[in-house]
Image (cartoon, rainbow, N blue to C red; front, side):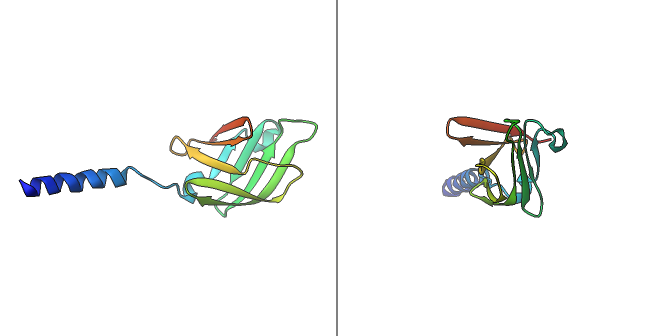
Length: 115
């Protein structure tokens, strides 16, 4: 009886720990939001070399254009800006197995789908 209980415990612990997956950098690479060449809406391009381009044309009279580097910590991508005219949303979380990223800044919620 004891080996059966140990086997069940081992299998249960394996399933528990296998269900947790930390997001890796490769999961985030891609373009999210509108196509960058459209010059409208909102897009973020995260490159393999950990550089990014952030384009927010929501306010056509003063768009936000930023470039910089990004890192992944605790399953979130943190954008570290190098160039910017205004503030930007800098913390993004991956969702739906890499199909989208989401963020929140104040009372604004963002969700961008991968192109």
